[in-house]
Every structure is written in C-alpha cells, then in structure tokens.
Length: 314
Image (cartoon, rainbow, N blue to C red; front, side, top):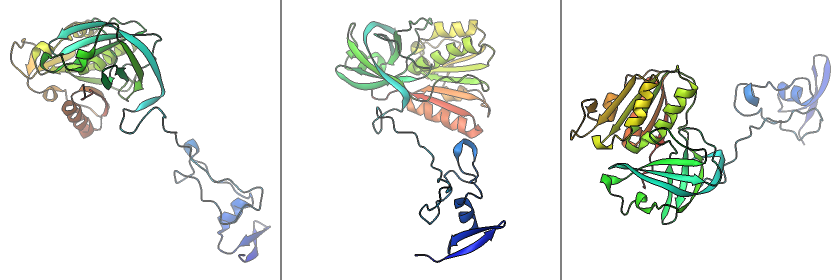
C-alpha cells in the first residue's frame, strides 16, 4: 500500500498518495475538471487526460476521455475500393448497350430500386462470368438518365470487345451493384473547378460538370478532355451542352495526329491543364498515369484533388 499524507489546497484538506501530483488529486476530489477541446478532444492533445494511479475511491473522479473511432465498414474487404458508410446493394439488368466510339461502349443498367449516390461516386458491379469491377455511374452524352438507371462508359482496348468485360455485356443479363464507393464525388462551393478526363474517365467528369452547371451556374469551370486517338473523343455532344451553358474553357487533346480536327490539340493531356491555383478543386478520372500526374500538379500548388480512377482489370 502506498503511503498517504494530508495536503491543504485552497483551505481544504485533501488526502493524497505519495507519487501523485497536485493536479491529479485536485481532479480526483472534484476541485477542478479536465479542460475540453474542440470535438471532445482533451486540451493540448487528441486523447483524454491520463487516468490517476489510484483505483477510484471517490465518486467525483473524472472519467478519462476516450475518442470514439469509426467502426470499419463490414462490407469492405482489405484492398477493395473504399465503401461509403451508407453503401447498399441493388439488383438490376442490362437494358442498353451502345458503341459510342471505337474505344468506348455505353451500358445502361436498370435497377429494381434506385441507388442514392453523388455525381462522381463509383459502384462495384458484379456480372456473371466476370470478377467484380468498379465503375462510375454517369449520364448519356446528351445528358439523359432515369432515376433507376445507371449509365456506364466502359473502355475497350483498341476497339476489341470479344474477351473483354464489354464482351460479357448482354441485354437482359442480371447484375448486382454495391455502392457508392470512392471519394471523388462532386463537392459544391470552394473556388474554380478544374475537371480532367481521360477517355472513358469522362463518365464521372461529365456527371460532375453537368450537376455543377445546375447547382452552381456561376462557378467557374475548366475542362480538359483527352484520348489517345481523336476518334475516341466521343463526348462532343456533352461538351457542346457545357459550352452552351456558359463553360468557356474546354480543351480537347489527342495523342495521335490521325484525323485530328483543328480544335483538338496534340500531345499528352497533362501538358494542356491550365495553371492551377491553391484554391482550385481538381477532379480527375482516367488512366493511372494521368491520375497520378494530375495529383502531382495539384499537390505542387496546394490545390485539392479528387480522383476517380478507372478499374485497370476491365
């Protein structure tokens, strides 16, 4: 048993144990309370104040602070895309399949019940005959979509459908959808929007750009859209709509010079991104190399960058 002695604090006699500090005993006797910081964290630290050395002989002893950490999402397995806390499962069928250009196929999934998500969110789609893939719900290039529809733009390598994910798509085929996932969704407010889309990555960028024109018509937008082949710039109707609604800075880029229209710039997509500012909100979707390069550019000026990566397994 530790030795105890008497101590007078502010005219009040307090029994203390040797080794305890004056603050420990003042707290345990209710003479003072722990200072609370913002959002429940103890002052000068992120955790609670340390518990006293003694067991709890007095009713006034302050309980140590404990920060409640969010529980892991039971739907998310290690290595899988991050699932939002409200992630749910839906069933549906493939109701439309359209070739938009040599490198992109559009597929429409009609759900039995609508799925709530924000523009730029992704979902995990399970299709018989293929492993689950992560796709970004979008709109048709003319902006059309129903509440119970998920419209996907799916890239195919060199126009080849057979043997690819797009080759597994069949009208009437049942699918399972789980979502939303990811953190690349549209966030209203906060500076200029710089939207960068690489090939089928235009799906998420189109959803964000169109939503922003309705919700924040005065917010500045700058779009940079690219493809390896100019024939794969399938998003012309969507870009025309954005131009008609006041988006003045839209840049189209193609790596190859074959049949490149005069308004399509040559070279890599990242070479044509406007000078970024610290208060920009950058959204990028496309190949891993494009997403990584834009992240570096945004980080160099301190701009926020929200990524919507394309599933490399498709």
